Length: 217
Image 1 (tube, rainbow, N blue to C red):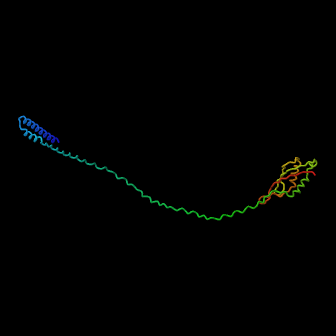
Image 2: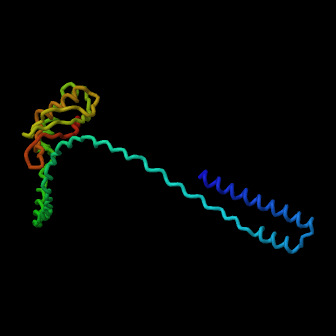
Image 3: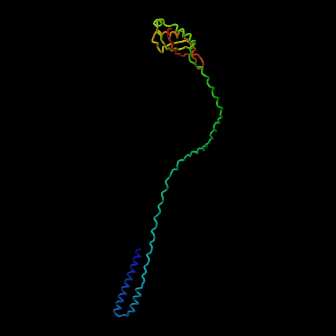
């Protein structure tokens, strides 16, 4: 590269020297009266000189660096064997159809129960009332008869299943204790009843209310 630059510089210097000499010569020719045409021809010949620059020689590329030997590959231990378990057998899904709905066989409706038997229940009723009422009147309390006291006694009696009076209570007083007491005593001793019956017709206890009138003739 330096050699090519030196050669190109020498050519330029030579050309400059030639040009300078031509100018000197032209000036001299003008001074001495040389013919104008001769000077013109010389100048035209000199000025048309082509100066060809030599192309610089391409430098040779530097030699490649020496190849370095690659280091040997590292020693790699082989991987341990991998035990691959066998794939499980495929699972078969068996879809069982639902059982058919039970067959319902309609049965005949049971017959309606028979109507209940008519009830035989009844309340207690007096039995031979005129007879036992007369006996109660005949047992008029002596003191009340002597004093001429009369009265009406309301009573309620409890009648047992055999038709007899089991208990007696005064519901309205006559105003005379001896008449009230005589009325309950007469009902207990003389009154008789047809006993009350339950729904099946069996005798049962009942009650009865009446009034005993004490009147002097």
